[in-house]
Length: 440
Length: 188
Ligand SMILES: Nc1ncnc2c1ncn2[C@@H]1O[C@H](COP(=O)(O)OP(=O)(O)O)[C@@H](O)[C@H]1O
Image: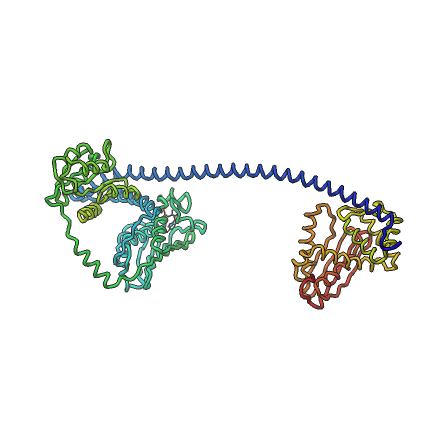
């Protein structure tokens, strides 16, 4: 046999092998085809499933967003509903306090005012939280004495500390460089919130506030020897409406807002808060705030601006007060007369339009939510109506319990020169007047 | 066993013994397949043993030695058929260690019913590797050849010592490998 030929048996074997291989291939292709069809079916159902899931998810998202909107609306309504009566209570309590009282009556009144202030603070907390969430909280930047603010806060809490058997002290590690640039009210709010918690969760213990400063920041540490917290709760306590556990609200009360406000204020200030705690041993909150040292130029500038404030008086001025709630109307009138102003009272927008057409005023204070014609509509008509031309330029203040940040922005846009938020105290009323008369 | 192995064995025999001898063996040996093999088919492993025996007789090369040469042959054709497999590993040790985890995994994807031997490895040091082979087929020497050829592929030098523990029909061997010289990667 030569190399050019193959044997018959090899030829037969190769042929047979080829046939087997072809059959195998054929079977494999069929198999592949079948699998491919199956795969196609699976991928079709898969896209159906994905579509369905996507639809479900977007529905869930819509529902969640609607719930959030509903929550915001509810919060706004609640805050309005509660603010209105609190305005009356606080206002009258304030006026009552300025009258002749027997010591025990004064004591009772004092308690009444205390409870009412607590209620007001809770509502203020809710509003602060909203402003912070919307990034609408504005921070002042003026020199203030950090040590003095802490000391006055500590002094305010001394009595409460004594009652719960606690000792409360402040240690200032660096008494120099205590004049810093920043927002005094927010700084105080942070210290007060931390102190409130320390006192609330400590009995017969020791509460210490330590402050220290560097050129760029101020650190405040509030430590207590109270009930402490479990590690797994530490991260959550800075969230809205969150308390370490459900029993806390039963035993200690509270809304779970204090710390979330602290942490949001700090976030907007560029500072931060941290906490260490041990159950049964106590807690330690450390707050670091970037507050620059106030330069002597800044201190001088602010002192001049402060003394340029003329003490406010409404003497000889006529004020149109429009308020449908009779109790609150009386409160506002009393405050106006405290500053020696004369009040003309209207119980509705319609009535006020008539009065504005015949009389000239130096200032107008309108409630916003009134039946038939609200404060915004009333102002628009007074500004436009030729009948009321005498008051076309009279500055107007909104006095309202609708105090959500977006609402306030709306009133300013409608032409009000300022807003007094209900409930208000004498100081806040004064601030409202100053804002308007300065602008007018 | 995969037909590919039969095809390779016949190719090797063709080149060593000539087609006429191979044809005669295939015509006369007791083979259920009648010597008709395709690379993609499956055939009784006993036929491979019969063929190895027959070729051993024809060539006068003892069976273990023939198996070992066949190991080299298969490794060469494997390397030219699947170069990407070899490029994945830098050294022969790396490749041998990957047989069980990577290569057999890939083989199973293509041929889910392949009956594969097991190769477990222990790396004693950078130079010393121990590989134990267990199979339903008594092909320890074939395995020996494969391992040796693997080092050639990576241009490495190693001493491979086989302890054959095969007693019955199943393969069982331990290979003690000491690398004497590192290579410069897989030879293309
Ligand atoms: N000093 C503290 N010691 C122990 N637990 C504290 C302390 N301060 C805060 N907490 C925990 O963190 C929770 C959230 O605090 P906060 O946001 O101020 O809300 P609230 O005090 O109104 O519940 C508290 O309910 C309490 O469980």
